[in-house]
Amino acid sequence: MHVETFDTAENEHDEHIFRFSKDGWVAMSDSSDIDDMYIINPFTGDIVEMAILDWEYNFMGLSWSSMDPESPDCIFFAVNSRQDGKAVGALTWRHGEAKWFERHLEYYEGDPFPVAYNNHVLFRDKFYCLGRKGNLGTFDPARDTWTILEKPNPIHVEMDLEGDHHEGREFCYLVELRGELVSVFMRNADQPPRVFKLNEEEMAWMEVQEIGGAALFLDFRVSYSMASPEAGHGNRIYFPSYSEDGKQAAFYDMETKAYHPSFYGLKSPLQCVWVVPNLRPHIVSK
Image 1 (spheres, rainbow, N blue to C red):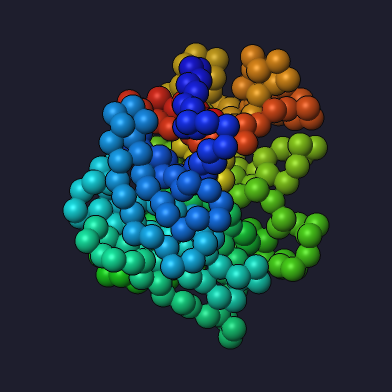
Image 2 (image 1 turned 120 degrees about the vertical axis):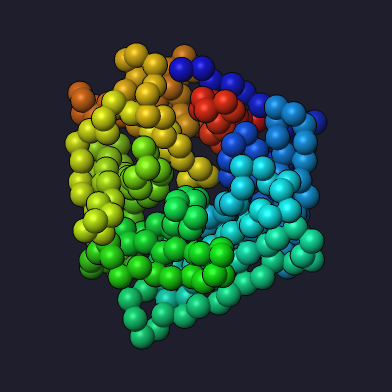
């Protein structure tokens, strides 16, 4: 599996924050406290300017609808929520608009939807967002509507949303694999990741022990799947971390049910993001 490094810094004082990537394009901002964002293709040098935010960047997820973000029909979608999930902000921007449009939604009477800190998936023409409880929300760009789905049922039905060590305090990921939605929940290095596929007929999460020889590349900025990886790399879940000597990428092997190498002592680039040019995942980092 080839790993490619992309250095964005012009000098040691530059600070670039990677936010998301899709089809070879990478969303970035100049620093953590600046409201200016843009999208760059590191392979062509093309840049797409986005509307300046009215606030400091606080999205829990960001994505766009087209393979080409320069397309005038492309819709950009972002989401955030309160820690307790009782208020969600769904935001959209289109080319030609001066600012992001926000829908502020409150759920004081119904079930809360604490948005997981990861980027959402465009699936069947809708943006699917994973909640920390394991339920799903969708944004339909054609109808301009946000919906919290009644099904699938949450994986964590009861959750202390304000606690620091509760069952749902996990890294959560959502990815499409062979036309199906897959969610992954990872608590710590002492426990294996829990992997679920969405059964659309029953609209229920089904826990699985293997992913049909595929490979998943997970990170809160963006996650990808590869249905047919190179020989010997199947049924693995890769993370944006490396061994101490930098020679081995970190992954969980679903067949041997073990992390390789040990998760303790791994190195992780401060700023990195998975990028897929020509359908082959690479990692882009500073």
